[in-house]
Length: 307
Length: 307
Image 1 (cartoon, rainbow over the protein chains, first blue to last red):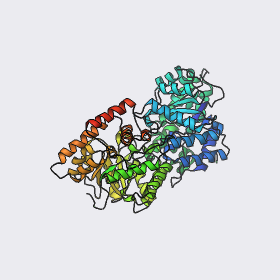
Image 2: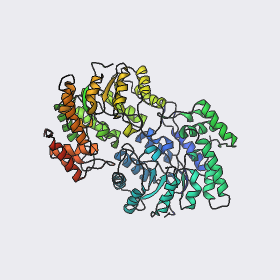
Image 3: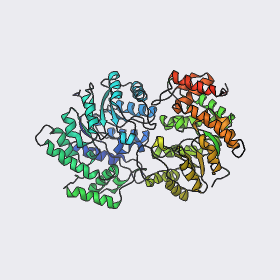
Image 4: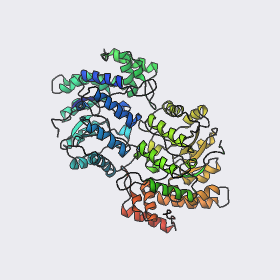
């Protein structure tokens, strides 16, 4: 089911830094992206859920994306989020992503209306593909029902892959349900790559034909997760899985996005990183201290971002 | 709790016409708006849930809004939807709405992240108000948990009204729960107007101090609903309520947005009105026929829009 010329491995849904006035900060984003790549991240899923992408306008996202590429980040490692509620926004984002030559576009379904049909979702993705009309476009469907509420069913994938084989190139499954990920793998869709939505099931995903994971904690713990990815067939893989899972669980005791930003801020001595756009709240000082203590108890030390 | 210089009465969340290529159709929108006002609508809540607003870009919404005002629709009857997931989008929409002198801005909470705190939602609305910084701005909070999932609590309203009295001017309660609407009324927030989310509880809302309703079916049945609004203290009010509720229930047997568009299309002999943007589906021909039959059985005949 997989392919060889596609992006694979460990992708971080890159957290987005905001200045004190809550405007996006392209310099800090670039620095974090470079650090992630230096630590072994195979790709950067900028503008995902953990990036607060939906808290930014399309304009702001495109400006940040252009800044990254202009600064030398290889589009071939980028899988920007491009799925919006509005068809016109999704088309604009996906067209730009394809034009830049990015590895793929990670596409949320339109998520305002609930209880929509697979017919309606099919039409959404088909319209996007037809309107973009760029052979560079690779769509990765983004299934995250706990947040978007609107999900991506196996039946929908089947229809899309049938009509747009090679364009509908894979999925990120953030259902949190291994049985669902396994069903996506077992379906054996042609030219279709399955990314786990976090590293807790990275090893299982690889053992069943998946191609990696796109994981929040890839923002702070990329090297060990990447090491597990490349070593999944080694005798040490289970022990490595246990170690990365333990760190993930320590972080996941706290609200994920502010927790990630707290970690990046702390280990870089750069409190600006703690800023979030509403409606998200930062961790309290007490939560932040508890989180850092959990990490230090595990000997975790995020190498500071290169100055 | 109410005020005298504010918009009140029956507002239609105006359905948005799309051409065959799914682009918004300003001419048909204008015609429908004029018809609604001619039938007694007290206001137009363009870009609400029933308008498929979130299926349009901010650009598309602002262009349509400008076209309406440029064509002579009085901004004083407009309460455009202006609440987006992205703070920057909400600020842009609300600033434009205030600058045009619209009666108010109907503000969804940011609805992508779920389980967010009242602190986070407070910061969202406070940032919008501070950044817009226009004394013309009147915010109407939009509580529609069945769709947005993220709701507006009484505690949040209390905090906002305390700090922004007169600016946070009211609420549309589309919870579908009269007890919730009643609690909003009973709270007696200063300078705060409560609109029912549909006409089923219009009479109850008026009897408890509310100021009207913003209702989907205002798109097709505005005159009788407006008549109930102005006659709520008359002896005939209960019978009038029964009649408008009966029609509402007939329509609500079908998915609301395609049903409204089917009705407008049918009674105007203009099938373009049936177009919807994905992810919404049109009614099947069978459903459409059943809906029209239900209406005709009730002697319903929507006066055709002026040519």
